[in-house]
Structure formats: structure tokens, C-alpha cells
Image (tube, rainbow, N blue to C red; front, side, top):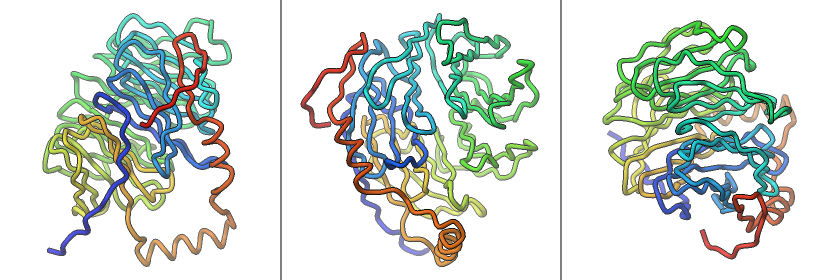
Length: 352
């Protein structure tokens, strides 16, 4: 067996309790960003490439279980054990909206146009908030068979995906009718569900299994058994040829999507890995752990086949990745925001 390369990650400190969710924004003109949710009640925003701390959203009074950014990384949303979901201005740090629930909120997701916010939690109810009319009552889908663990949008916001904490399977809901149109069956409860960047696959984790489903026809495409109970998995977004998974054994593993062969095993966390996510360009992936740290791992050099694909894509599109002054300007603009519950920004000197 070939000796695997030892990876040295960027280690991001700052959270005082376990990191339970991570979310990357798409690439924007100012780079891309990473938001993290933690049981310490303070979501954090970072530069997605370097891991540098940008700001802390303060205002939740309980563990934050889920976080996300909109397409342009202008707004953030968080779901918390304090019975609220909040929407934040990711540039100024102001709390824009706070939506009250009747129980713990476990998951949240922006729609494609960021005009809707989907939430789910211990109430067994899915809620859709119209952010253009934040004072209006949300639309509710109250037919969930159990407490909601994960939510996501797909099919241009025509379908909702959800999984439950105590029941196996992933349910797909028609947004217009509010009815379940399909259930993806799993033996154990699904702890992670991610729609691939190109919308082709749904990746799920249940027990020791990572599964990939066709997002349009809902058939099972791949299923791989992992060395331990896994909590999270993420498919490489550019080529779809590898995926990363993390779980109870504290290691972050990379696998070949087509064969299931282990490509890399990254050690460094000192507690179970709760969440893993690929960056939008696939050049790195982040892991969040019980140990309170985020680690950003480089994917490694491209293969000859991938290099040829990149060259062909660049030649045909002429697109160049935004770097340099734009990202620096935004970082300087946002550096040091710290949000009070009433939504006022105040300066803070900190080393996170």
C-alpha cells in the first residue's frame, strides 16, 4: 500500500465549545467565506481560503446548531437551541430578523434567491419564512414524522429535503402541496444531507454508511461503509471524483467517489468530527470537531486528468478567480465586528 502524504491543516481557534456545523459561501467577487456554528452560542465568519477570523455574531442565548450564507455572502442565517432562527447582515454584523419558534431549531437554509428561509427542529414542523415580508406568518408543513435534523432546498426551490433525529430516511417535499413525494430509505437516522454544487447528487450519512443519491430520479447511486460511525460527508464540487467524511474516530478521511477507496486519512482533531465541507472550488475542505477547532485541509495537487479539465474550462470560459484587493478590502471592512443582542456593532480586540 502506498504511503499516504501527511497533511498539515490550517487550525482555526476561537470557539470554546464543539463546532457542529460549517457552511461555505460560493465564490464571490471578494473571495469566499466560511461560517461556523458552535454550542458556545457564537457563530463565526472567516475568510474561506485562509481561515482568518472576520467576525463573531453575538445574540443567541443557546447552542447554535446550524448556519448558512446566501449566494453572495451578504447575509447569514443561524438556528439555535434558544428557540430562534436569526438572519444577520454579514457585512455590518447587524441582526436583521429573529424568528421565534416553540422549541429548539436544529437546521436552517436559504433559498436560491435568498428571499426565503427554511427552518426545522424539535417541533416536527418545517417553516418557510418570506424575508421580503418578515413580519408575516411563515408557511408551515407540520407532517414531519419526527424531530427535524437537517433541511435543504433543491430543484430551484421547488423541493425541500429533510431528515429526522430519531427516524431513518430522507424525505422530499413538494413545496407547493406540502406533501412528501419521495422517501430515500436508510437503516439509521440521517445526520448529514448535502445537495452537490451541480445539483446532481444528494449525499447522506447514516450510521457507518455514506450514500449518494440521484437528485433528480432519487435512485441510490453509491453506498460505502465507513470504518466508524460517520456524522458528515461532502462531495468534491468541481469534478465529483472524491468525497470527505468525518465521525466518531476523530479522523478526516478522503475517498474515491467511484471506487470507495481511501485516498487520505487526516489526523489532528482531539474529539469526534461533527461536520465536514468542501470549499466551493474544491481546493480545500474544512472539518469541525468536538474539540472546538476548525481545521482547513488542502486537497492536494491536481491529477493530470484534472489539470487537463481545468485548462479546457479556462480556455472555454476565460474566467479568472477573483483575488487580491477585493477580498482584502472586505476583510478590513468587517474586521472586528462583534454583535450585541440588540443588533448594535461594537469594536472588539480579540485573537481568535
